[in-house]
Figure 1 (cartoon, chains in turn green, orange):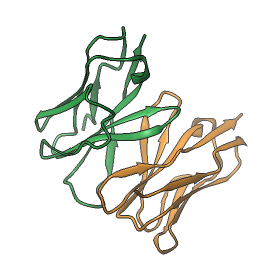
Figure 2: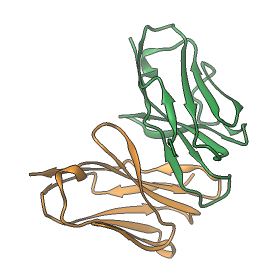
Figure 3: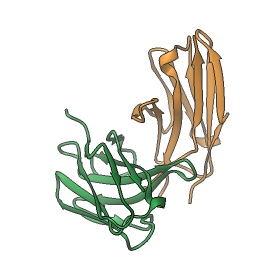
Length: 115
Length: 108
């Protein structure tokens, strides 16, 4: 299996620009998660989807952040407009079925720098 | 929400030494996983272990769910074991909450 695939791996953008991060979950997995990792806050869950439907977006920091999952094999996390404090590593993860006890697998992350 | 505490926060070992990392959590859990984040940032699954004991090569893990803790054992450590070890737990709200991690440095 190819694992969770994220793109881009690295992005440097200017403050105010729109950023779109992409994720392809493991085939057959129907739960998808977006996490953000910073030195100050560690790994935080931003949003998760089950069967392409957003279940909990309470971790999304503010309205500048939005996430979509138009089909089972693709999700995006968008930041518009971006700010320097959004600089972080953004991880996408997936698991099989939304029930307690499923192993979650992470992508390699998208390293975002906003200058 | 559920609280996850890991100890120690930092650990420096000489190659060949053994170590034990601890994870305490504040509530009953449906899922507990140990991850290794390597120096390149990749998060690698080590164990899915909501209870009991598992072993994989030089690594083993034990979770005592009734006492709300888990231990990760690393034996005969190697430089490639360096990185951050995270414990993550899933409570009744189905969210996987991470601890702050243990930064392990193994020196040759």
